[in-house]
Image 1: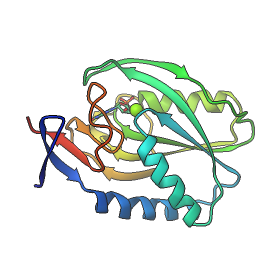
Image 2: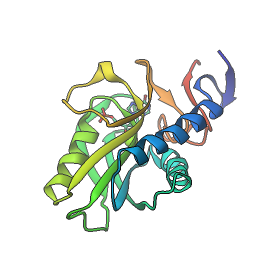
Image 3: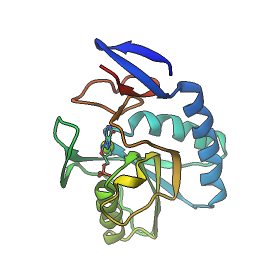
Image 4: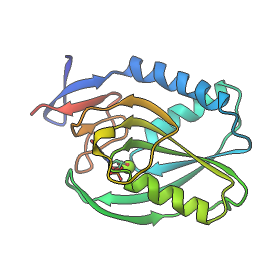
Amino acid sequence: MRKVQAAGKNIDILFDEATISDRVLTMAQEIKKAGMSSLLVVSILKGSFIFAADLLRALHNAGLDPEVEFISLSSYGTGTKSSGEIRIVRDIESNVTGRSVLLLDDILESGRTLAFAKDLLIARGAAEVKACVLLDKRDKRVVDVDADFVGFECPDQFVVGYGMDMAHAFRQLPFVGVIAG
Ligand code: IMP
Ligand code: MG
C-alpha cells in the first residue's frame, strides 16, 4: 500500500487519484442512464465539496445540465464518532417543489445524515430524491437508507482526504486514505 506524508502524519492510500477519477466518470454515466430530468444536485457540505466539483464537471461532460445547491449539515464534532444528531448549519436557497434532486455526500455511514436530508427535501415537495455517495460503509448502517449511486464500498476505518477531514485537517488530499500514525 502506498504511503504519503501530510500534516505530519503517515497516510495509507486507500483510493488513489486515478482510481477516483475513473470511478467519478463512470458514475456520471450511471446518473445519466437513470434519466433524472431537470436535475438539481444538492451537495452536502462540508465533506462532499471535492467530490461535487469533480462529479458536476463529469455530469457536464456526460451531456447533463445540473443546477447546484449546497446544504451544510453537521453530525460530527471534531472527533471521529458521530453525535447522532443532525443540524442544518446552512440551508439551500432553491425551491425544490417538483424537482428531481440528487443528493451528494462523501460517506454514507450510519445513514442519519442522508436520511435527514432526504426527508427534508421530500417534506419540501421534491418530486424525486436520489442519493449519490463516494463511499459506503455498509456495515455501519443504523438507519434504513441506501444510496442509488455508490463510488466504492469502504472498509470500516476512519478515512480522510478528497474532502473528508479529521478535526478539520486532511480535506485537501487528492486521494482517500487512512491515518497510519
Ligand atoms: P452518517 O450520518 O453516519 O451516515 O455519516 C455521514 C457523515 O459522517 C459523512 O457526511 C461524513 O462527513 C462523516 N463521516 C463518516 N465517516 C467518516 C470517515 O471515515 N471520515 C470522515 N468523515 C466521515
Ligand atoms: Mg459530511
